[in-house]
Length: 203
Length: 182
Image 1 (cartoon, each protein chain N blue to C red):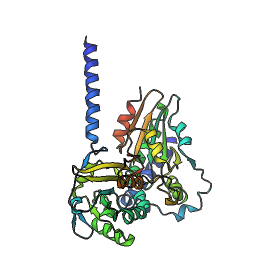
Image 2: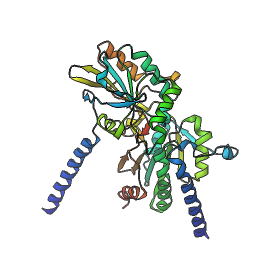
Image 3: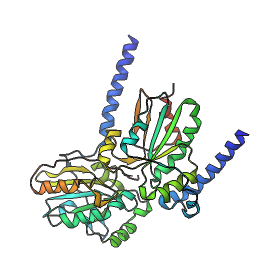
Image 4: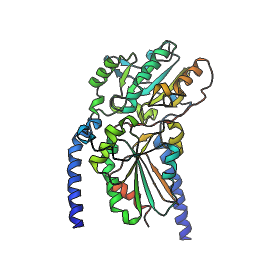
C-alpha cells in the first residue's frame, strides 16, 4: 500500500513539475498576441509599436553588440529593414542584455555601433529586462515576425534570420524574408519556427 | 610524486583562471594574446565534425557516463564553467565518467582563437569542433526543447539522458552527475 502511495506521489510530482516547467518557459507561441512596449531608442526617443500607424507588421529582433552571431547578422538585419520597412514591415531591434554584465552592450556602445554600421532601424534598450521574457527570447539574435491585426500584433514567425550564420552568400533559405513575403501576399507562413545557436541573454 | 605534480597543475590552473576572469566579462574574445602561441599550434590536431559526424559521439552505447558540453571561446558563461567540466573529467574518471567539449567556435577562429585557447588552458577533456550551418536541423535533433542558446549540456548513459540549457556551478554539475552514478 505504502509503495502504491509513494508511486502515486511520485507520479503526481513528476506530472506537476512537468507543468511547472512548461509554464516557467513562457514566451510566445505562433498565434499569440505580442505585447507592445515603450523603450528608449539610441536617439533618445521612446519607441512603441503603436507609433507605426502605417505598418502592416514588424520584424522584432532581439540582438546586441557583443554576441558574435548577432554581429555576423548585423548587415543582414540592416538589409531586412531596407527591404521591408517601406513595404510595411520595419525592423525593430531590442537589446535585451543586462549592461552591468555586458558593458559592451550599454546605450553608449549601442549608439556607437549603430552609427558605425549605419543602422536605419530603431535599436532599443530593454530597460529593466522586462520585454524579452514576455516574448520568450532566450538568445541573440532571436527574431519575432508580427502581423498587425485588429486583435493586436500576432506572432507569425519565431526563430532565425536564415539558415547560414557564417556566410550570407551561402544562405539557402531566408526564413524571415519568406515569412514576411508570405504575409505581404496574405498567405500563411510556411516555416513558422526555426532554431539557431545564439548567445544567452545576460541577466 | 604524482600528487605533487597534480598539486602543481592545480596551482597553475587556478592562477590562470583568476587572471582570465578579469577579461572575461567585458571582452571574452580578447582574453588571449594569440601571437605568442601561434608558432606551436600547427602540430595540434583538432577534429572537426558536421552533425552526421557528431551524432555517434553524443549517442554512445557503452558503459560510461558521458558529459557533453556545447561551448565556444566567445561565450563568457561557457568559459566560466569550463573548469568545472575539466574537474569532473578528472575527479570522476575512475567512476566511468567522460567529458566531451563540443566547440561551436566559427571555423575562421579555429587557428586564431580555439586552438590557442585549448592549449593555454591545457584542456584535458576531449575537445572537438562542430561546424554545421544547418542549425535548424541539428538543434532540435540534439534536444527538442533546446532554443539554441549556449552553454548547453547533455549527460547520458545508455539508459538515461538529460539535457540542460543553462550554466552550472561545480556543485550543480556534480548534483546532476550524481543522478547517473550508482
